[in-house]
Length: 113
Length: 117
Image 1 (cartoon, each protein chain N blue to C red):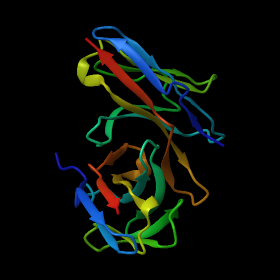
Image 2: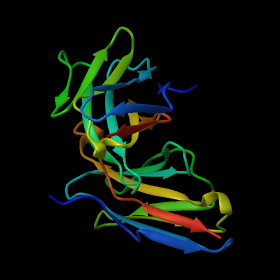
Image 3: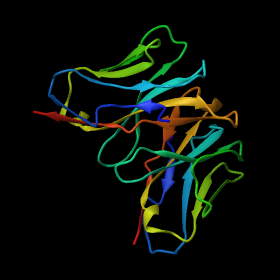
Image 4: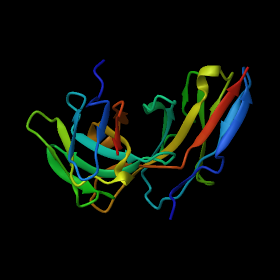
């Protein structure tokens, strides 16, 4: 079965650079979520999209933005990167608002040096 | 306020024994869902089991079962016959409806399980 695809798997950036993370949800899933998991931390909700419209925002810094495109893939754009942005970034998708569960991608591990 | 509480930062269990990972939650929403995820050292988030707030019976998935006590607001994960491959971080999570009207998952701090031979 198709899963949630995230790219790249690993990313190393320098401070003040920008990064773009991509997510391809499971076909026919209507909602995409982005989570940030710092080292030794639990995942924190950043932002979600329902049918390509932003549906909710969590603790997403103003330096970050995201969008969902017509083909339903989503991108998380991070600018002016800081050391504290080093984390595992997960994308998840669901159908019917999570009634049938959430499927997570393998994550993108971002390291800011 | 923490909505999902996992009080055990770490647990040790011997291979083939059963282990219970604790999870308590707090919500005023009558409709919610509780999930358990496994995160091995490789980092991926693997879904284990789900319990809906209106489900009458405890959920089971192979060696995983969820001890759901609604009145106590607890949703403990029971792993029977532990295997070495069960060593991982385990997260309890709750689906709840936010002010936006949309739902998302809120995670607990996790429990690190180590299975010894």
